[in-house]
Image (tube, rainbow, N blue to C red; front, side, top):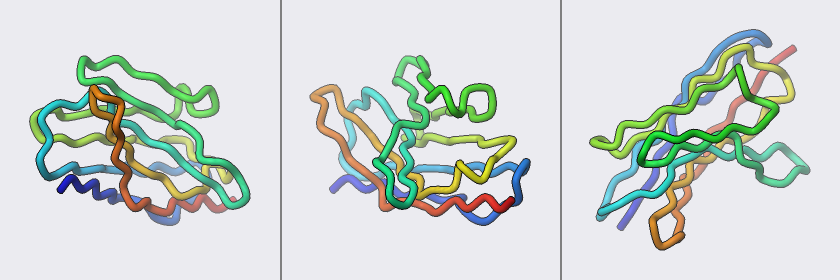
Length: 116
């Protein structure tokens, strides 16, 4: 059984930083992408950043230059370094792992709250 566990969320003041981690465990043979999505109250879930197994990255325009996604293929982990946080970054952040078959697994989410 595949499981994704996020950690690192919390409460931070505007301008501060947080680092999210996501650990994937279970029967994982190949990963196509790992990434981070977020969902704020009343809004749809949106892509924040993703990284392929080859190291290619993709960012939402709202976080470019502030957030950095990285991965450790050997450990099946993905990280999200979030700097210069803004109140509008407040959301539940979810880790997503996509297999080459396009099947995807999701974590349970971690709350990030940025106070003004």
